[in-house]
Length: 156
Image (cartoon, rainbow, N blue to C red; front, side, top):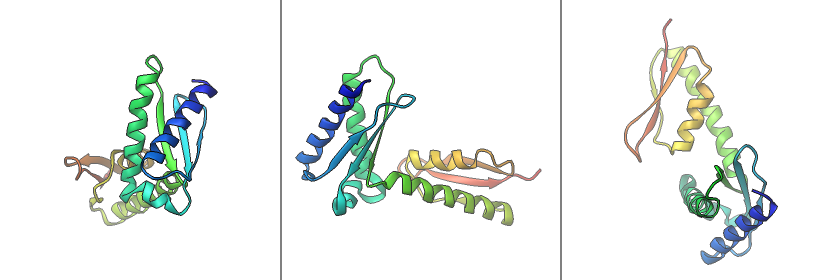
């Protein structure tokens, strides 16, 4: 994908957001890095409405864009990541901190820790953050939308 493709994605995002009442936004689409297109949206104070509870609206927008992208880029393997006002970066940092704290607690107490239900992306972030811990194992249990990460201590 080239700059023209990135401009097309930016235009799609602006159009979708204008249709749902977010006309005053800034959209920037970075060129793909390793088959990942990052779409950054600055929405000011209304950003929280665009993000939705636990990122639900943001995930829905990302899904719509993914569908549009697949339709227009038939032969390219490209993923899309949409962020509003830096929400995803802040969420990732929060999840990483939580993962480390949960790992310490599971190791210290010798007990399994069950986390709250999370989106697939949030669960993946927890699994990735704890993948290198030799004394901790993670798994996802349950059915959507109540799927949770379980952190278990490993006794050697």
